[in-house]
Length: 320
Image 1: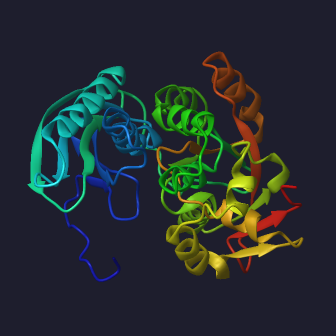
Image 2: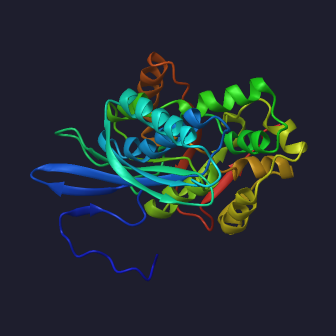
């Protein structure tokens, strides 16, 4: 991305490197994002709804509210029946309606496997601000709003080793919108935010640390994770994405205690429709946790922002 020219448009307030772009227009801030995924579950309706929730997440991470979206679809017309496509679209429509927005069109191409995503347009409510990745301050707390391990579960589903209960747990987590978590963080003094998706927990923490020119001390004891992740990892539920993330971020992380290979894989596990990483002052933590709890969301204080170190992330303790 470093070789791509930066837009000279002065109305653009955020662009490359952010979860979504922010654009100042007629005294309002418009927000635009795009995301696309391949199937993470077998059911086409669920896949469509999950893909939609995943695409909306970038909008919520910036403190925006979605207005409308355009579908982006790749579909193998020669190998799958059109009813699969219909169910996929129904899932997306129902989920976008849950968000209070609409799907107003889109584009489809013939492809070798199903792909579904959305380009979402939203706006920052009047008087509020676009929440970037770069606003973290020394002493701030880092809060995570969803457990990690979704990638382990979806890999187990793909490998046919996940139980029916495990499949249901994964689907329910991915279907949860970050709408209420976003509203809660807008009601406190949030300094920075991003959502946890393909780069895993450590990758997205590194983004906040890099953009803010600071480091983050991470307490592994406080990180929420899905119950069966370690047993599934030991059964072989690993994907290439985890190892790519480890390779990309290994020089940015220092472990103060030895961790197991399964723990390292979990920290780098690519998420689909993951939670928000919210960075805010310590004196705002209790208020945010209360607002999250009122919406039946479990917020977890997983780290503290520190002065810039030789690495972006320093971990304390272990999971197990």
